[in-house]
Image (cartoon, rainbow, N blue to C red; front, side, top):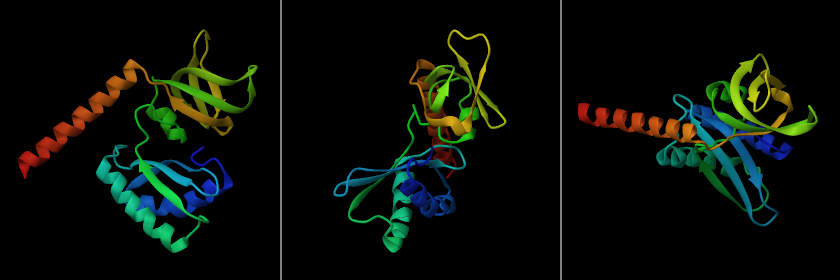
Length: 182
């Protein structure tokens, strides 16, 4: 899910070690567009705290650009875009489903399950290689194999917005405390 196509996966193999060495984790990579106007979109976060500031995007972009210029894995011109996954982020790794337990998400599967491919509910963590989700109107928690999920994203809710505000407030307080102690 972090990459959609075979080309995405090759680029991920090239770029991921660079991101990890710089202290970041790639959440999702997509090479989009046709032959003339392509865009390499990389969503990443700091490995240490899951945050991603503008300065982090610039730092990671520079590191990736060096490797991309040397390896030249994309034919023609492209634009590199490095960003934060955002508040209503994609869920691309099994650990994301555990991290965001208790928040609402939308899942799309690569096959039919219970007569449908799309599900919406509250994440209930993980169980082995399965994503646990409490579906609206269902009595029991559903377990969906992670390998069946082709797209997953948090739903923008008041609870998720509150979490985002709390994370920003904590980060600002930590930065202010650091500046005071210097």
